Image (cartoon, rainbow, N blue to C red; front, top):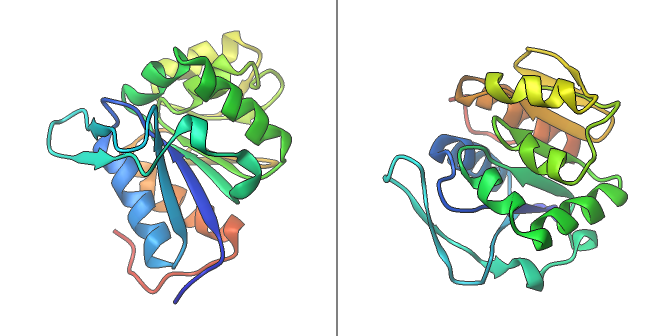
Amino acid sequence: MASSKKVVCLLGPGFEESEYQIPVDRLRDAGVHVDVIGPKAGDVLHGDKGRAAVMADLGIDDVRPQDYDLLLIPGGHSPDALRADKRFVDFVKAFEQTHRPIAAVCHGPQLLVAAHLVRGRTLTAWKTIQDDLAQMGANVKDEPVVIDRNWITSRQPGDLVDFSNAALKVLGVTTTRLAA
């Protein structure tokens, strides 16, 4: 089944492999188009465990926030690498201005921090990021999935089924694949 929905996934080197693969598989199984965005189109990005390599469909200079229905930010070392590149931070800021959903897992909220968007928002993240979020004025919850307005956040790989389901729900699409 095909969907008209499009997701933009920001990915850098050292991404947490399951935090990329599980949500993307679930989205694609539901017929959602997912574009993987790296610094440049064709860049091969390697996962943190060395088992996965993903080619960027497009470069960050090739995409516009208004062309997508949801922004996906997997964790691992990827968000830390991406937040050092102003183009990714600016993209996150511009995407937030569309009021469309942002789904960030584990270390993914580091990009939200770099974009100065977390003050007053309620979210979760990997345990070592939770204190950073609180210091930046966020209301932090240690729960598998936290939804605050247009944001969906999760803590860790063990939360990925719930995280993926929340992303699918907000997009209004369903999948026939059984939960992982």
